[in-house]
Length: 341
Image 1 (cartoon, rainbow, N blue to C red):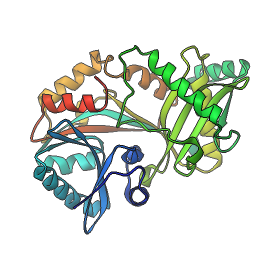
Image 2 (cartoon, helix red, strand yellow):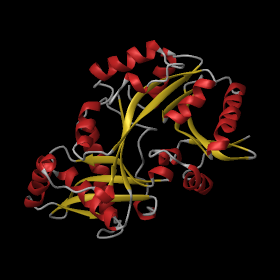
Image 3 (cartoon, helix red, strand yellow):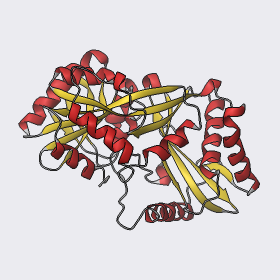
Image 4 (cartoon, one colour):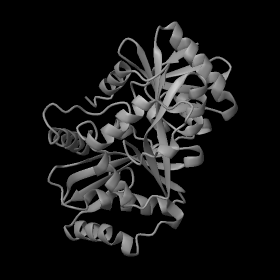
């Protein structure tokens, strides 16, 4: 069995284009994420090592539906040979059922949100506050531009985006680390492929105030995912909303069917969405506890408020699974891997 660990390997991109059915599947080709492939199985499972005992997978089993169970079996066998157990994160119910059949304890950990673009209109009472914020940003002289369209990938732009990243992180506290694994990566601006990534920035008087990176989505969720977002700490109100509306209008003009607003952990939890057979009461209690008091790990409420502004049409529960049963050590290793703690 082969292990791939290259940055954005073309075979991995090809597999995503053929089989990925998860809106966050592009996370599978982050630079440090590895790819399990097996001879005879045209698919992959994206993972990283967490400590000495765990492998953490993301975005489900990326293969044809009829091949997913077999690929999962081979991955679990390979993990066993390495002396590791598996934690799976950010996957849909179809994969959750396969994992439960193989001894995983599975619990909802959050949800992802998508907007159907052809019918999206920023009109009506429900969008009044959103329109007002965007109008205010425009009155302040802010405009949104796309890299590769109205904006060139200059060294000055690269330097400014790095500055924004540093300011954004610094505003969260000197001990805060950049989240890893479950968020996208900007990469080299000069080599950005607009068929896979789109970057929109907010500019006023030549100064960049913030940006949103969109990643390609495939399969049933074909379109774009609202991924990495950054802004200067004193950015005027409406900056990020203006960027996103500009992107939406462009995507609509291109016939894009969906904009996925991304996964929010600890949000839209619903006991009715749990799998009774594989449900872990301990993990369920902990997830609900973190949803109420875990803003120090992730600002779920703030993220959810932003996403609900856009009136998402599709809300799908996402899950976390622990091989052999919930493990506090496994959860700790996972949180350290993502720099959440």
